[in-house]
Amino acid sequence: MRRRSIDTSPTVPGSRAFRIALLGIVAIACLLIAGTKQPRWHEYYKPITDPEATRFAADALAEATSIFGPPAIPVRTLHLRTSTPRTPGTGYREGFLLTELVDAAAGEFCIYVSKEAGHISFHGELAHEVFHLLNAKFYDSYIEGLATCFAERWITKKKLDWPAWEKHFLDGNGPLHGTTYFMMKEVAAKVGDEHLRTILGFGKYFDATETRMWLDIDAWLGTLPADTKSAVRGIIYKHAPAVTRAMATSHYQVSFVLPK
Image (cartoon, rainbow, N blue to C red; front, side):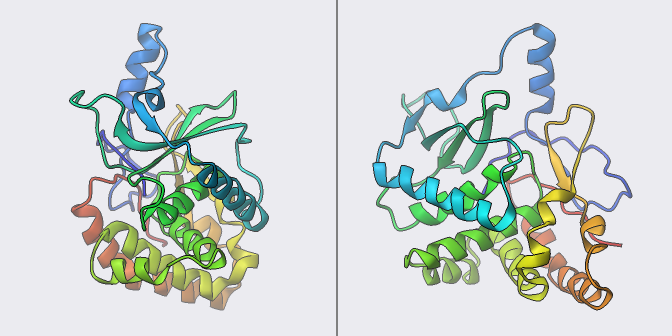
């Protein structure tokens, strides 16, 4: 559940991407050339001060780490924000979800959710975004689906209402997140945790800036037993048309590279 706002289209090895888009590469490059720092965007948005939300995020990150290993960049500071500007009428974007790497050297991150604490959707959004703390550089459909699968696991473990989310997706809402979720849920069931836990180790950078990553699905599939690899490839191709249609109508800009 991640915001993307600038649509560029670099070439991905193999030219097998349906859609590749990176957030802010041009803008960031211009800032670097100008010798200025990137704005600390979270300071313009309303903070979430509910202690329960802070505990929920910390516990969810511990759960994600126990399954998939430690974050690529250690999380030392985590800001929680709603994607509502502090000052109305500023023109800043609203209603998005995002896990932002604020300062890699300092291990500083910010999670934005669209709902206030107490809303029925709040914990689902937050759990999804916590997963992205494991590697906030991924801009990839497979990882989006996996983040929602983690949200299901954590929400269910906390005895919160996951069936409402599943119905939300089945009804066609949030199509990109729904289609990638159903794809990766089926993949996860097929491969099991032992193989799934390695998937985040197969990211590749889009370019030399090393700011955004896509999943090398073929490299990960190459670690699976032959019969499992074939089955997972079939699952992905079965869901690919729905994912592609969802991407075509979504403002979320992530990669989707089909396996060979």
